Image 1 (cartoon, rainbow, N blue to C red):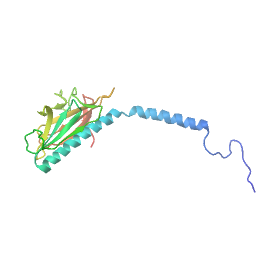
Image 2: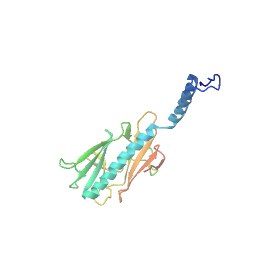
Image 3: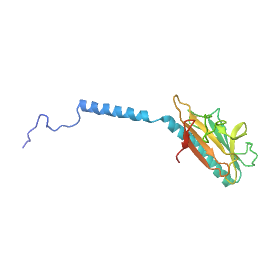
Image 4: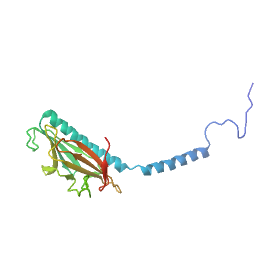
Length: 192
């Protein structure tokens, strides 16, 4: 026996009407635009660059302890990159037989001098105070894990309208490396 077919507002429907689908799309569009305004890609780029510098410096420190010779990290601000040089003879000169690798930071992120450093004083440069090696500001990690200088490396996202800055700080006696978030005048510690 065949069941009767119901028509009208209470009839069983399959799928959505065009009007219902359009309303859902409009609501999703509005929510997406609200969320997108709150997300800053420049913050993520800055975080990525700071973590790249920090992890490379931590690796340099580990290599210095493991291999029992200096490992020098030098910063080339003009090209947005840095070099990790395993200085087997501890003379702080990159020689042909010694391993030296270059690392780039995010394309829009630059090494830059902030108005105020993480210590609340006027910063002396993008890598302050790092000793020059091969005409680049550099930090050498020694066989005991300590660093040649207590230095801070400052980074800024160069995208249009970006105001985020990051800093990577090295403690001289222990070689401890931390990173900070800021806007060039106020700073707070970064995450892990």
